Amino acid sequence: MIKSFLSFIVISVLIITNSCNSPTEPEPLPGRRDYLWKVDTLQIPFTSLIRIWGSGPDNIWAIGPGGDLGKTIYHYDGVNWKTDGISRPISPLSVFGFNAYDVWLGGGDGRIWQLDGNIWKQIVQFYRPREKVIGFSEIWGDSPSNIFATGYSGYEESRTAVIAHYKEAKWKLLEFPGLKYNFLRIKGIDKETSKYYLMGIKETSSGQSIFGLFEFNGTDIKQIYEGTTSRETYSAVQQIDGKIYFVIGNTIYRYINNEFKEFVKIDNTNFYTQIFGRTEKDIFLLMADGVAHYNGIDIDYIYIPQNRILLVDVIVFEKEIFFLALDLINGGNLIIHGKLN
Image (cartoon, rainbow, N blue to C red; front, side, top):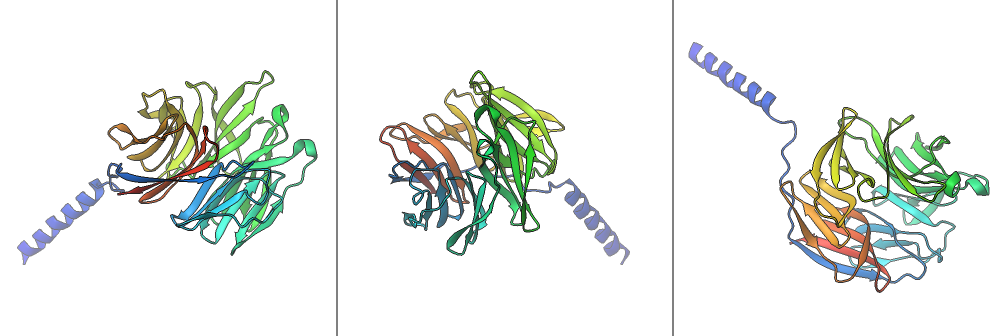
């Protein structure tokens, strides 16, 4: 009896010890690279699709501003890309959602739209005088009840930053007149800092473009980086697997304890600064000449187009990925679809 009890104690201690020493999250496996590729071309006069989002490979939205307001919103059902052809008073600049029936659009003139079943409805418009017109360059949320639309108020050198916040079923506009930026991206919450992070751009009186990175707690903003559009100082922000990653020049960083910590350096001058991914070992790198991939060990190309293209946005699923691009030679909007073999 005593021997059995001692054995139970030993086993219990081993279980507790192993549990304490085990990582709280499993180590991610290196991402695969065996994709099969297909390219769809959408010839849409006067319209460039610039943002893509989807709840799954058979429910994807691609949007962009254009002269024909009936051809700025396209949907993919897993087989075909279609537009309903309905003209709406919005030039969409951003799209984001949570499922097939909860999708949001942000655009010019301070307008925010929501998909209600199969119908797009304008939910709110923030009115401003013409010289202070509002545009929403990004819309993103961490839950259906907590959404942010980020952008700008005003034109060119007089532009200032704005954030519209959806909470308790209402949209409220936060204005930052001291920040002469257009907030292009917002990502978060970083699970280690519980903060949101933004990337913005501003134009100086001399015509130079300046990029900035910002930390946001839901109310207050703190700038954490500023640089130019040069290859060495261009910056971006992205969320991957609940963590926020920053790109400055040719290096990917994490922001820990108010310091940028190097994650990986990309020794390729064709690196285009934008990254997307599933885990820290499954990251896609947008390059000037295609798409490269970091698997936690090395970097290699997984897609090289036949013509010159400009990659503008990406949506990543478990086994599929969709790149939105512009054909710089023949014109047209490209959707480059990769599926793991």
